[in-house]
Length: 85
Image (cartoon, rainbow, N blue to C red; front, side, top):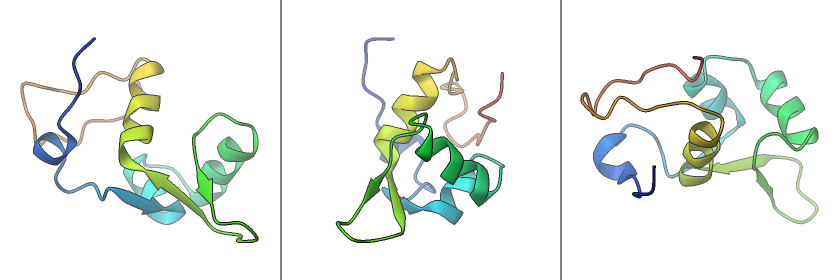
């Protein structure tokens, strides 16, 4: 793909930093699946030292989606699309 996506332009409704629930809603799955993907090293996540809650950075999530063959609909910048192919 080569070019960087301007997330603020194409996905303004997606927060720059998300919690587990927000990401689960975005990916149309549940929080347990998100946590399992993090534990298995499938999904990039961050956690404060000694903390229990994960946070997710929008650009990392979208990079992960694209690297796993999700293609954003660049013709329709406000289409939420679906991460499944």
